Length: 157
Image (tube, rainbow, N blue to C red; front, side, top):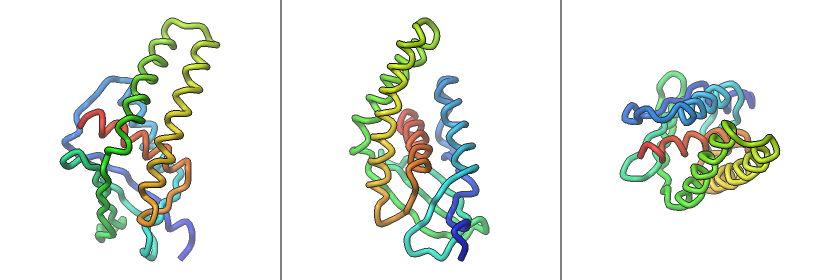
């Protein structure tokens, strides 16, 4: 199987996820677009994709339903969101500061807040990679985009 087969071709967010602020909606759309355009996604023990991923929340747990493009069930992984709560809370607080700063602060203040925002985002991405360990292999860029989607799901949950 070629390495190119270990990728996502589609990402779907559960229908129960409502609309949010324009900033959050923009983050979600960009993350999905970027994720589908470039990713590394390898469910452990499966021969190859490409894969479709449906993300949802069930009883405060993240559900990752993976199928092939043809609809063949590959795996369902359920992750507790408890390890993400503090990170997500911090991430949304700093995002609010960032969006406020864009509207009214100096470039140096915006840059400082953005550096903090990226740091927290990286922490969440690493936590997600760790939690997926032994289930799904992803690279760091893929984990970053998935973490953005986790934040949107958690925010709506």
